[in-house]
Length: 305
Image 1 (tube, rainbow, N blue to C red):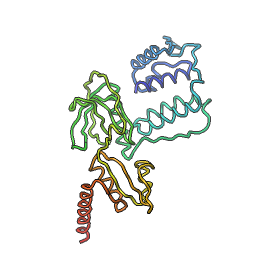
Image 2: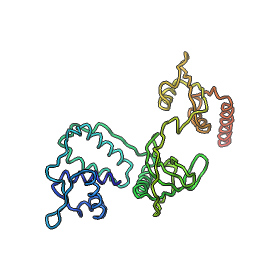
Image 3: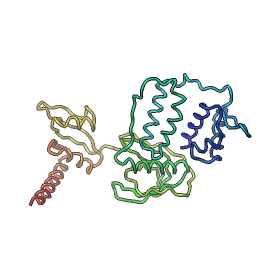
Image 4: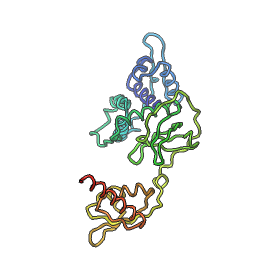
């Protein structure tokens, strides 16, 4: 969260003639020593920050320094605020909302119109998700080991990782880090993580490759699927795989062609359509579906007796 704090401090300095280190420390809920290091970082980044000791002293941007407002248009600033608002939808401490409040006053004179982009990155697990994201950010910022219990497709396990990136992809949140158990980089889904613990022990950062988030890489094919769907299921096919995943037949039914990664997930997907789909291929999975349907029918027949 250091970069966000630096942006916030710079915003304060651009809006006010002078601020004091205690004011900034209270505003950003950190120590004066941390503020001092942040000011040094801003100076190293080329921002002409000056400090003056004694009564009436404080921290300010050197006189004559200006930000060219033409670098950011009204639309640019609206997109920045939309991005911050989306992050606040999963923030447990409303940090990004406070950052928006700092940016908006100095920007209101060149922001025209109303907000046109609304993004909510939260989920049904919003409360738990916010706590996890905050804990993981803390671990990433401080290079702390992160321990957790994980529910994976191959069973449950306890993991300890070096966390490096929070990732939002495929409508879910993930953490990318080096796993001590696997001795390699792995992607972990936050909804499957429980009992998170940020260790006091720190790790030395290693060279980190960016996660390869191509759909083909993470969800490789391998199981060719051919199925016939009833016409009223068109919206669901479009929602799941797009309008090019099927061929409309003369009788209105939809011939679906695709590839799936996991047989269990494929079975669950097909069962979710009930009697509105007939699997054509693979043949062996048709037999499994028949057995599953017969077992389900037996369960409900017993419930009625």
